[in-house]
Image (cartoon, rainbow, N blue to C red; front, side, top):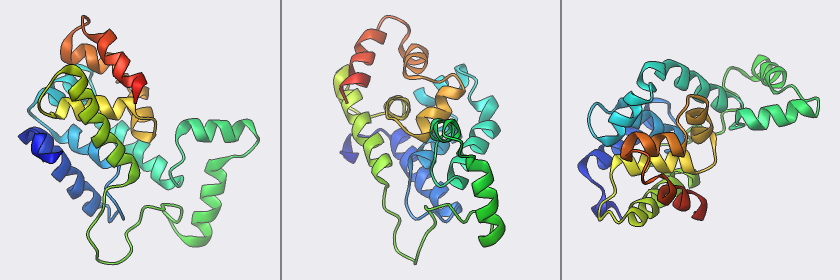
Length: 191
């Protein structure tokens, strides 16, 4: 599959590995792919990121991703659902960190000196990007397909992007205009 990746898409993947190494993560996750996409200064995804104002809100995106890590991978939707049951995740995290140190619930910490694999979620993003590219009739997988896949796959990255106005529909419109949205929506729902 990687032979079909454009140079920009390959740089996103290697950038994701670099982000995982910086945070000493056990695996390369969706959040690392998202951060690597936000790093890009060229390419179709960089255009969409800039046009949606995500580049200007990078600090907010990073803060939300850090909160998800601190909460052991629980998204805002998960936290809200638990709050509806009377469970205050923030209070629980504070107590655990008080007893065991900051980041104690970050289950993605690296153990040992092995090579970092891609998480199930990150592999899902790569697979979805292939499906999106094939569905559009593209013979390559570009960074724009990775960005669309991040918005299409449920998880923390999609939730953070949506909270910042970057849904599958808005990214698709930024990349291709309004005329192809229905086709793209079909592939979002299919996978």
